[in-house]
Amino acid sequence: MSTVATSKIAIAAAVAALLLAVGFALWWYDRQAPVDAEAMEDLNRSLAATSMDLTERLATDIDARQLAAEKERAESETGVGLYNLCTTWAEFHSNHPGEGTLENRDRACGDYRRYVTTGELPPDRGGDDDSP
Image: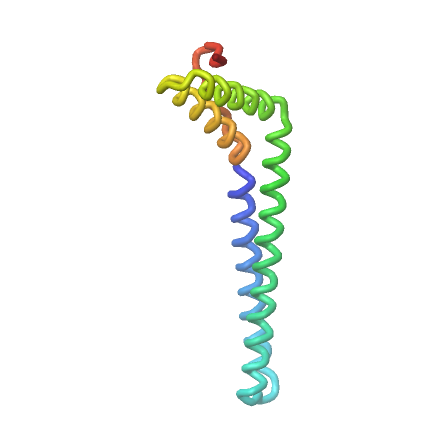
C-alpha cells in the first residue's frame, strides 16, 4: 500500500474520530442546562475552527511524509540509476535529435519521475541495456 493511500486512510480515520467527538460533544452539550442560541453559535464556530486546524495539520503532515519518501527514493541506488539514464538520454537526444532518441529520453525520464513519485519500478525490458 502506498504512502499516499496510507495517509488518506489516516486522514479518513482522523476525520471520523473528529466527527464522532463533535457528535458526542453536541449530544452532551444538549443534555446540559438550557443553552441560548449565541452560546451554541460560539460552540459551532469553535468546533469548525478546530476541525479546519486539524485538517490543515494532517495535510501538512502528509505532504512532509510524501516529500521525505520521494527524497529517499531519488537518493536510492535505483533512483540514481534511473536519473543517470534519464540525463544520458536527454544529452544524447540534444546531440542526436530524432524520434527514437526523443522517445527513449521521454521513457527514461518518465520512469525516473514515476519511481520517485510512486515507488513504482519501470517494467522489465527483457534485460536489454537501454543506454544510448
